[in-house]
Image (cartoon, rainbow, N blue to C red):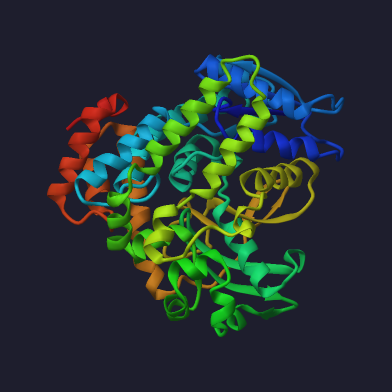
Length: 447
């Protein structure tokens, strides 16, 4: 089986390769093609993967290319994991928003809209090229904003594109650990959009054991989300929110924490990864060790401002456990390639799952996966407190996709002004003006 990773010079690629190295089952990935527009980043990540593989004779072969057609040709699976304008773009997304007094974050609010506006046009073109060059391939989307990008790509790829995110996996793992429950025997009732979902139940042997967690303050406070949101609010919701909902529920505190920080998350990662990639220009550097050190620092500082605002303290060792994107992606590929059923939380078309949204809307829900793809499970309706947020944010995603397809600045402005975390049309207009001034990729937007 052949895997192509678009964005193959990205920092998280070694996580994927680590999962592939551990796979010894029949039908495993035997060849990986890394595609990136930056040859130096490709070379750096190639060194890391080579050191990861060591002398393992069964390690998947790795090749690199900057040619998209070459990368897609013959692929069985394609990972879409690009960052248009790199981390410098993320830093701009965050700073422009904070300068206007609204949330500056990669995927949520104004920053997420700016990210989507420059990413969705690329995603649409990649989807179109994939449909032409590798119509047999399954595309697994890693690129944020994941739900929005997956929905845009589905216009050309239909249900052969599936979005993944490690947040529901991590949330479920931490809740199950707190409950002392074996993940193999549990079914999670999770529903929403990407970075906007709620864990509403944990079914074990036909019984929901989540109420036991909600009733125990000590258990609720024993894991990251419990400390982040607080016992009272989680009990009020009757569900455990995705960590990204902290930006909605505690927006004022989150904005204040972000503005008080010495630098934004994007600026921190830009500097950190800049040092990492620069260090690999020297032949004497242990590439894999340098990557591991950098990754640990990255994970330890994840959502640090939110934890500070909530008084949640440092991340526990259990919060840093591996098993995110790469394990979801591997399980997804196995289920499709081998027709081995798997239950995974994925970003897929709604079909008839949530009556509040139309069938083509991409949502994030538990799915049954087999050789025919991902099939969302039936679920109960969204709770009333969630309906407004989900439908409002879906309308924003749709407006971004419309802007990307048509070049309409009006649609882009509607997306910016319509987001629940942007509090004024005047602010939305200034945000869009400033993003267009600093991000050349948004030059396509016109009146």
